[in-house]
Length: 296
Image (cartoon, rainbow, N blue to C red; front, side, top):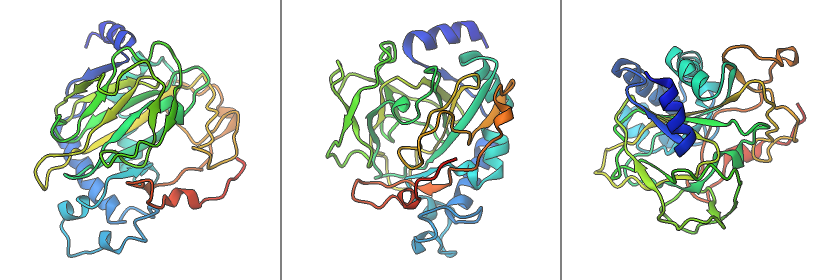
């Protein structure tokens, strides 16, 4: 792997595709684990314990998965994801080149996205997870071939360069989930390119780049599954209030060291976030909002 060339392209475009980051057996194991998480077999996932249709032992794995859009923070209930897929040796190596020698992670998401489920409107990840040094980096790992038809990722190449966090507003579209969309950007809504990738490949993307996905319009029974982790420079602080759910702090410490050293290890780590089902529409109740603001 020519990491210098990869980093140069990443800096220019705001994203980079790593082919075959994980092998087929690793992807198969992760898909099996995803079904177990959705069944509640790995521990409490807010929204699942209230959803009796997800706890039916008579349903096969695909039937269970077809009823779920996204699980946030699956590493909080799955030792497999926490231990094998957040700081996987090949992932750690990649992040060390794109971010630096010291890297920490703070978030994971499992997008299951069965046929008929919506995508996400244009957004920037640094809007949600602000880093002191603008080092937020996403890693989007394809568990299925991601295509235009089944709702692959779209990006606006180079949109990260101005380092502006744009305003957001409700989109009012059934094509997208409950998240807001970017407004006031210099781009048209259709300015963007699809990033189709094969199963096991990954997209590394800058926290400022504008990106979205469209609905899965493939035939019934088709999924566009992906594991998305977020990383940053461990030398920087993380002033993240978890989307207003906790009292703002200078350095949120619910993190995992991925490679290198943690210069702030003397602070210890916290256990703040938890696994939950992401709401599909603005009218759905987000179980994550039930938690009261706490100081950590």
